[in-house]
Image 1 (cartoon, rainbow, N blue to C red):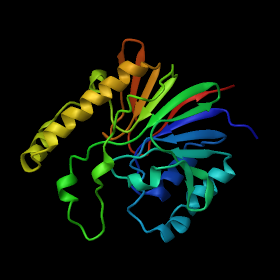
Image 2: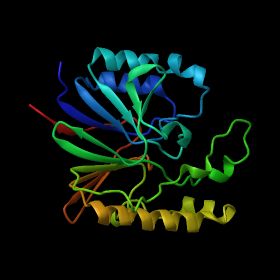
Image 3: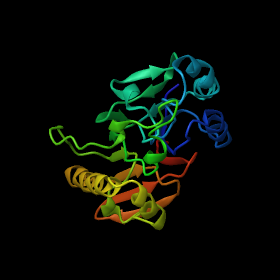
Length: 234
């Protein structure tokens, strides 16, 4: 059976069971599902993934759907070096940065990563939950094309969405490098926008649903566990 829709899914932070339940409640089927990162990869031992992901795999198999995951700042970048499946399930796929998918006539660029504003609390834990190479990086040597959509974990500030709020400012007091690192990330994200200027731009990270329009691009932030319909073919 062919797939007829593209769904953009929000952060889940390791709550895979609830994610599967929400997809089922939304009657998602025959879908390419793109996850915007903060899936929770790296917060569990490798041997735990087959059991942890089994309900999601079962739902995807029964609904004729496929899940693509980019890395967020709460995902271990080491799992995303190459395009690969996880947990032994061929319908759950991790994507490296600068993967291009062509789905249902749509060309989509996917790039993960973001700076963790809570990283200072995750530096020294018994099990590593922060990774130095978590952040988005701009590949200026990539052969950019025209895209129908770009999917990232965080957003370009040019979207006008989610500036520096009081909570982020409070984290900057304790983390002296945070302000500069966010500045670099913001500048590079805006450069990515200038290099691509797609019709649609999807991201998560901020745990809200929000929409903005800039030039000819529609920016859409998807909330945690949200399943947003991007494209549907009759």
